Amino acid sequence: MHFYLLAESAICTADIDTKAAAIADLMRYCNTGEDRGEEGFVPKRFETPSYAGLCRIVPPRELPRRRRFDTTEGLARLLHSIVHIEYSAVDLALDAVYRFPEMPTAFRRDWLEVAEDEVRHFRMLREILERLGYRYGDFPVHRGLFDAATHTARDVLERMAVVPRHYEATGLDVNPQIMRKLRPFADREEVRAVLEALETIYREEIEHVRKGDYWFRYCCAQRGLEPASTFRRILDAHGLRKVIRSGLNVPARQAAGFSCGELRELGAESCED
Image (tube, rainbow, N blue to C red; front, top):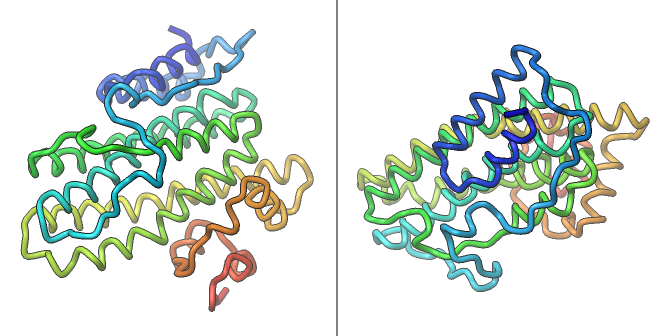
């Protein structure tokens, strides 16, 4: 199976083990320089996310608020939402590999590495969720990240701005906040396991955002665009700048490539170069 057909099948399957096997095969293509079957390739527009058969999809406003982390169900609801983000992130990374054949091989290799990490994150969190007596799909989910991929399907510059530099960077802001809320309940083994998993994810997501930052700047350089103003323009075009919350994680975002000038523009109260 040629590279892009294999990537397409990986995106469309709901089975995480099948996705993982395909990612390994796709990486082999990148590392050996085999023919990718690129001639005549036109990426498809996917109408529904691969998890549609696993989960009940609802609008974000219909998702119940996650308030109680001191109960098994409350912890499971929180964990399920993060499991869903990690599953969605696998498909987002694969879609970047699949959708932009004009990009260098290093781009595909970077996002396959991200996909490998996201599979591992998903499995790690799913195992804790199942220890709590729940499965992925037991709670409703929204399709926000799938829609973000759809809205940026035509332009790799927009994809890198919106997905890693906005949504994944927002995860760097939120992750420590979630951990702070969980720590009072760390006498429970399951909570400690979640905290340990979130620590791992946090460290590795900085690298994911950094890769997105690198390729965003690469695309800006190719087009003669100034990165900071281009990022603001793209966020505004997608209605995203107005939803950035206070509490930016300045050190993590700096480690991922954001400049102090950008962070101040986004609302950071202080930042040191």
